[in-house]
Image (cartoon, rainbow, N blue to C red; front, top):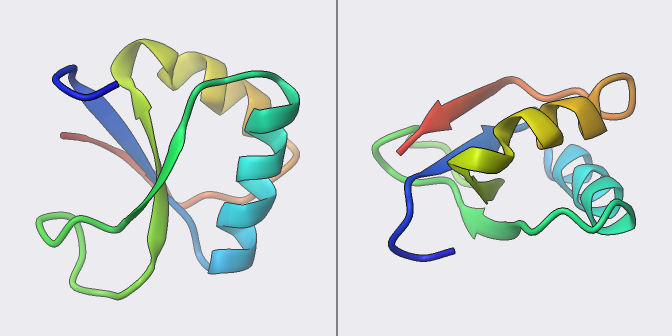
Length: 74
C-alpha cells in the first residue's frame, strides 16, 4: 500500500471507524487504520486509509452501513 496514492476516509467518531473497519474486513477490502494526518485535520482521531483504486469499492461497501464525513486524496 505504501508508495501509492491513497485516500483517507474521515468519520464522526472512533466507533464509526471501527464499524467501517469491520465492513471492509468482511468484504476483504485492503485497508489500514491510521491517525488522521495533520494536513487533513488538527483533531485527534483515526481514519481509514486505502489505495486510490479502492475508493469506489470502499464507498460502496460503507453505503447504508456506516456514516462517514469525507474522503480526502493524499
